[in-house]
Length: 269
Ligand SMILES: Nc1ncnc2c1ncn2[C@@H]1O[C@H](COP(=O)(O)OP(=O)(O)O)[C@@H](O)[C@H]1O
Ligand SMILES: [Mg+2]
Figure 1: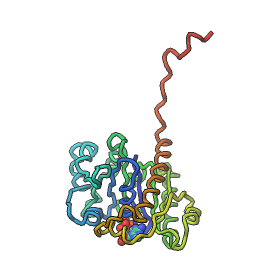
Figure 2: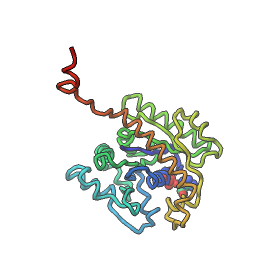
Figure 3: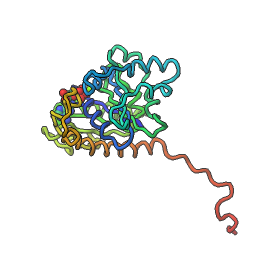
Figure 4: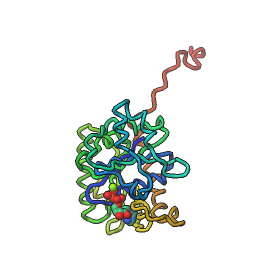
């Protein structure tokens, strides 16, 4: 199951939210950095200690045989148990024009035969070379927004654009929002009313924990109990549940074929 996360304008914290959700995800997951402006996790959370070809190298390999065969080889472990893996994004945004988003989205949606979910950080909606196919292929699209009037206004336009796309039959059916730093000043309910889509939760403002995720500031012992990670666990559960519900609508279970000899057949008179 693929979940696409995107923003409307500015930098509300999509990457930080996607990473926090991935680390808190209730199932095995891959955080895929599809932002055409480039990936941030290796240089941020990873403090530049690991380098990997990520998306750019995968794309080169994919030309020789499809990404599904190569995807695994380009994933890095993000946690000790390898429940959370990372597909590092582009180091040079110039490469975005060469990425086959359609092919990649298909591979991400079916990762490990569907037993692993993929959370895609798609960056800003409408950016050049935006991974539109990931948004179309996703079981759910999550718009990440701050709670200021200008952020909510921008998100309203983004939601309208996504809805227009879905009305034209181009995918995107399950849309929801996650608010970063709710109550500054608008609350989740007001934002949901303004956007006309469900708000699945809010990640609290937590500068310290956010700087661990976005800039690799060393995590103290309390990091996993920080307000941000506690919030992320709650939001991750709700996003996963929302996406699973819509994924089930997208792909209803295969119909069980009628038995050749109906059960109890011999009793029918
Ligand atoms: N919940 C949060 N609390 C405090 N600061 C945050 C939070 N989420 C993100 N930030 C900060 O906002 C800035 C932008 O975050 P980032 O995730 O890179 O945004 P985007 O991916 O939308 O461009 C970073 O400095 C990050 O630390
Ligand atoms: Mg980002």
